[in-house]
Amino acid sequence: MNTKELEFICTEGEGQYIEFKERPDRSLASEMVAFANAGGGKIFISITDAGQPIGFEATNRQKSQVQDLANNCDPPLLIGLVQSGNILIVEVKEGKNKPYKCREGFFIRIGPNAQKMSRDQILELCIKDGKIRFDEQVCAEFDFKDFDDDKFDSYMKLAHITNTLDKKDILANIHVLTDEGMTNAGVLFFCKKAI
Image (cartoon, rainbow, N blue to C red; front, side):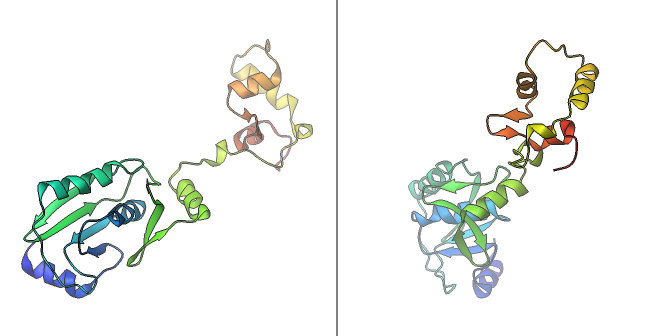
């Protein structure tokens, strides 16, 4: 990064993809996690919140500490470390295995801040990233009186499955019946009518 680019970033200030930190500390982990859970970003270490470079010589030990913070996240974060003069830049890409968490919890980048995520935000992120699939969720409204034996028998014939097990065991083996109830996929396949 050249001097003009750095001056421009300092002038523009913190935002959705840019964070300034005076020194590496424990809060760095929550910032990295926030970027990974959002669209990625860069953390400029050795710049004040007001955009003033203060400069320090980043040692291998400090770089190792930053890498350790990233490795201790769950799941571990892949980061890049770039030295530009007296500024250490931590590059965090958008994560492919969201949600990410650090010791302090789950965070997401909203504008110029890392915000701790609420339970609903974590669930929303899991659903958005395909960690929770509709077809695998249990249908709370399902009642076995709505089960269609004709559809089940037709499935058994098409799948060439013999009827030697109990119906509920077969449904459990094909992963449409759990201890909590029938999944949405099971309802779609074996219900008399939409619930």
